[in-house]
Image (cartoon, rainbow, N blue to C red; front, side, top):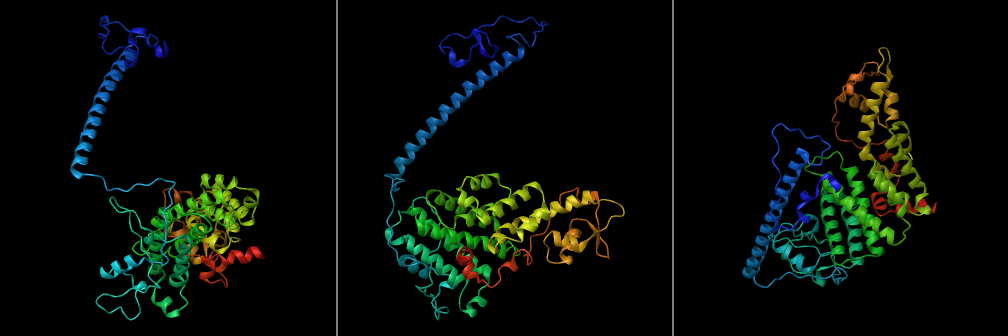
Length: 443
């Protein structure tokens, strides 16, 4: 019999539970059974333990099931008829709100003083109940909760209005034409407002199960905004910018956008596939998905460059990594920037082993150039933070013992040489709308 058990010791589910238990002959106290015997002591003990646990588990599962059924009957009787509204996954909800913020929500937020200062009607700031500017008020994100009513058509914005809302958030909030408004609103505050309103935009799209070209544009612009903000606010404190939350929502946008690319072909797919690879550098899943795309997407210039950079990252070839990063466009450099700190740390660990010679001195300026740092002073600060000795003559004395323990490097700072210098004459508005890549493709 399989498993080394005799017929009289078959598993419990093969015996009739009403049959009397099988009796075994008593063993002699000093008899030793070999490990190859089918009736070894260990096998019998395991069988008895498994049988006991099986019966105990069945009894506890039955008690839990009966208790759950009883509790559900009591709660249903106490609450009365259910008020929850359910609809099928294939049903598409109508949307008829043509404003960026539904009128009902705008009135409620005015009454409860929940308007953001970027939504106030000019001149009403000092009133007891400041009024909302219909041209500036944007629907805020509302967390789904149990018992909420089914969204009405007047509360949902159709895809064209969602796209217009995203355009306003870029043109009127993040990149205002009025210089006074731009100076009075820090980018961190403008992004916090924009991030919440973009969540509401995606929520409307999910609720009404919207798709098509308008939603693709909404997702593309949302990805650009979050990728740029991740770089622009990398030096801010956690109180002003939380990168983990932005990363979570950015990954969701990437996933949603790539699913749309699978169903319909878009001319921007190569750029966003490359962004996805660079932002998730080292991810085999992202690389595998990109390699399955059609040849015209996979063989685009920016895709080939992103795949080469990802390969260097996996191989630990930091010299070629930073050499290739210099050829990336501005927004793609923002996506790759989050990995610079790790690559530089691995490079210093490699140098600490490869150049650990008593009389060997490595030029600080050369290290700064190879690691894509902006100055030799920044390279000196990085080495000292890792416990690597830097002489007054500007040379480094590497030692194997310098980086044996894991080093917690400081937060990544903005990089002029590898990122900011590529912005050139492009305005932020043109970058977030994707006009930079459109002109480069035309050229």
